[in-house]
Image (cartoon, rainbow, N blue to C red; front, top):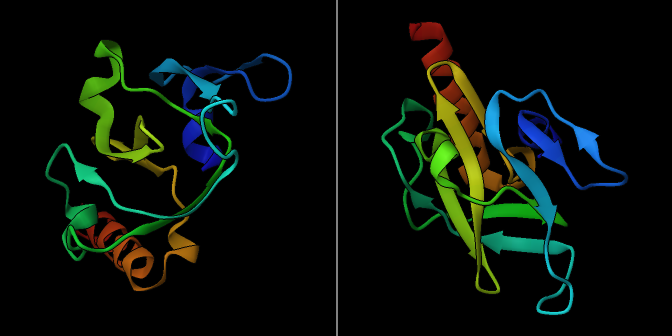
Length: 129
């Protein structure tokens, strides 16, 4: 998840952190007065674009999250949004893709079969160019 957040312009995590600026937007903290922070657990995803990375994943499969900060969807980054997720009423970007750049907020390595299928789709996409 840190890898995806690093691609954004900046983050409020710790002191102000400048990101790589590949994806427009700022990573901000969940409002702990409205929800339990960190967000830990299983959640679904809403798919915003077709992707070979997700070709082995069904809409019924949940992903595993552990995070206190999130990237909101804004007009400037909508074309990057692969999936979004809602936690306690807060919608956020749960994965991005544009061309060959792919990153996730959720943890594929902790997401069981769903995560393995994301990794399988990613490796197949790389292999097929």
